[in-house]
Length: 173
Image 1 (cartoon, rainbow, N blue to C red):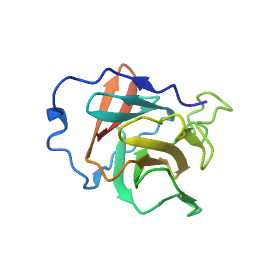
Image 2 (image 1 turned 120 degrees about the vertical axis):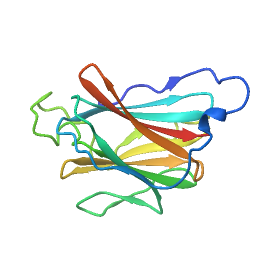
Image 3 (image 1 turned 30 degrees about the vertical axis):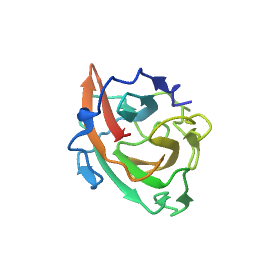
């Protein structure tokens, strides 16, 4: 529950100029969304792999993303190791479904701490992503561990679509 199948796109011909200017430096936005983060999706594109975090409301959602030696669960400090040569800690500033107070999908739960949303076996053959795990939802924000081939440049942005907000993380190949 809480995630969809990886989507695959045909690689774009030519170089990957679309990733020019991306970097490995931490990126952050402080906005906090009150509505639940209810879905995590992964997709492949010609020059990057993508993670999309869907939030059930139009409010701006912030994020904090950086490479870490190991991602830990907020509150418990439990390590959440991932496959790959680098761990990208992704904090979405919205509570995960089941950890929120909005009342959507009673009994629904995005994931449990440590759950593999996209295991290494499912991402075999992907260029950048190696594994995605749920680390925690604590004090209104949700943390994920993304295993990446190595420390690759990335970018972040948010998109509002109808009454939903999306936080998008693109990881260059």
